[in-house]
Amino acid sequence: MKVLLTLVAAALSAATALAQPAAGQPQMDLPRVKLSAGMHVIDAQVARTEQQRNTGLMFRAQMPQHEGMLFVFEQPAVQCFWMKNTLLPLTAAFVADDGTIVNLADMQPQTLDSHCSTQAVRYVLEMNQGWFARRGVKAGSRLGGFDAGKR
Image (cartoon, rainbow, N blue to C red):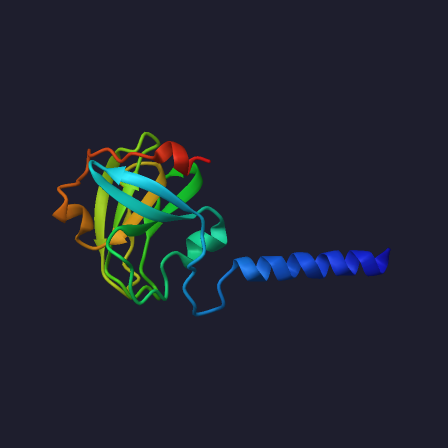
């Protein structure tokens, strides 16, 4: 029985290690969801766990223009983000449960400057800096697909 428990613990540990990126490596294999901003489709990786959210888009050297990362939190709260170990300039969209963008924040690479939502939100969508502005997406705009983000 002790041997079996040791094997199960080892298997769980190995599975957990496979699901997490190695230190200093970008996480590239998170589940994805399709979101929309008007006619524009966003292919977003979904960071749901604390570990996934903490790593976010760190260590990424590039990201296609139509891709981003959706951070999903268990409860609405004021969410604050910074750019430690993040190499790309990003814009964070702080998003209400119904998909409405509460506020946007441009964030510069490799800084510890804090960028926060102006009210409690459960979602934050990070895209390449300028993506929202080039498409006329701003605070008050509504993003589609947030039912998918709740699954």
